[in-house]
Image 1 (tube, each protein chain N blue to C red):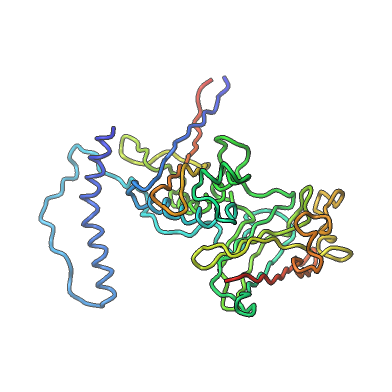
Image 2 (image 1 turned 60 degrees about the vertical axis):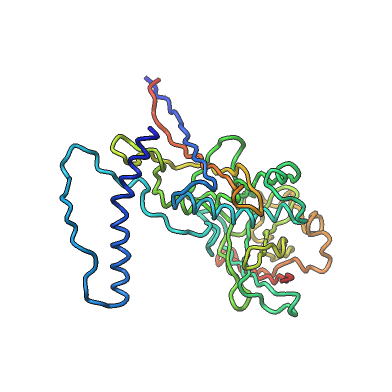
Length: 128
Length: 243
């Protein structure tokens, strides 16, 4: 009998209201990196938000990838285990190797509008 | 489920807070080199062994602040190619082009096959977090305005001459300059020696046909590049910005 791989995704959303240290570091550092890198796509300083850049500047969608470098150090600190999801004993147990970071919304001048998501991917084996 | 998590977090808070306070006190004592003890004896009885689940470390190791993964001198990340050391110095036009210390310098370039690190495809395609930002780096200039990166000699892709992207920021992260570094060409040059890696140079775009460098008639954007395939290449470039 052949086995099929099922890939599951856990999507963690982080904004100004998250209170854990890890979440706050991710929020603050991704905002700083966004402010730096977005200047490449906003060299005239015409735009104020991520949504405007996406709408008007070709290639601005690369900012998801470019800003993700600000948070990969925090992913390493997780030691390959997804946060938040606990087993019956209260332990984190789901491992991940792959991720995708996304900027949901941001404003260069207002960190409170900065909202990001980290999608954690993990594989499990299902029976055919 | 929500309620369970909430209660669990309360338990962890109640148990870990005294531990944290205790840890701080110990550190303080070590520094001040006092010999008196700290804290008071805990009179509450242990409850271990009762039929409850002991709360475990749900947050994992306490997180610490880390810089962006760009901050490193060696940006190779396992990409194969001929070694290249890039020394880029930043000068300030508003100060007679004297060395600008404390500036943040980002560089990025393509690999031997001509590909940049980026998310592949569209939608929900995922990436391994260990080496996703290959051939991208960030350094802060020293007192001589200098940053040094270790990398591989860039490959090329259709429509462009060999190049390295550079973005210079002030110490506070304000953009000062976005530019590209071009490479010298012709017999004996590094571009000729590397010969486009496995692609060869058939269909290569030279600087004078490149849409970025073709207006650079005096070669101000062309770096000095020396070295050999065996020993690797050294690139030096001076970039002046308004700071």
